[in-house]
Length: 206
Image 1 (spheres, rainbow, N blue to C red):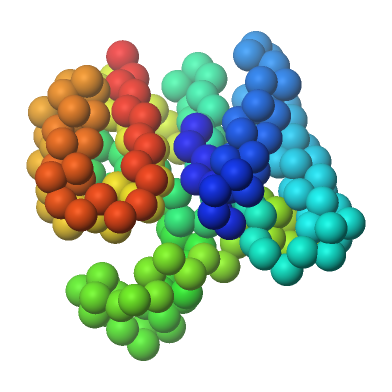
Image 2: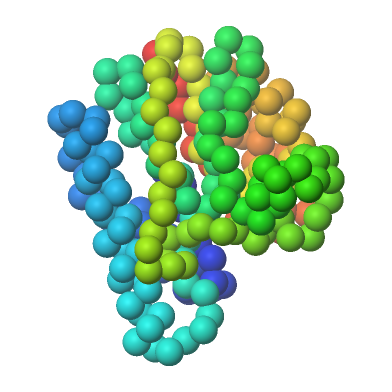
């Protein structure tokens, strides 16, 4: 999983740490549906605590985090996400973006108000429409799909995918070597402006 805190400084760090630590309560064995439900329950619990903290302090500053989490069992993967941290799947030479950003820019693209190329030039790329801790009623999107030997999965924060063109991410994943993919993408981002936190996890299904 990847959780990218927002709100600045200690606020984002606390929110993301709470989400990551909550996932330690998920059973490592058992039916995938049960584990997914446990993950959703934990995310809702953290969301409740973050919203209560904001209410008790009467603080208008944002305190929340994006999340993208992957659970797998017997060749089936379940993906949960809120915000603009992403999941990419590379299969048989083709890379897909499995998740869809919960962002203002994505909403504009879905309504055909702009193309992906135009969206990448907008200054509003970091405005998200869902996050853990943003609203009392948490909405987490999910997807379930089969895994095949050789599949490579990349989970990452927006600090990675907003800093690099899609083709560069796809090219890195073509190698099929998780360690090289991580090193290649990190090097590419840090060679540029690297204006945001960079977090990525790469896995290969065998």
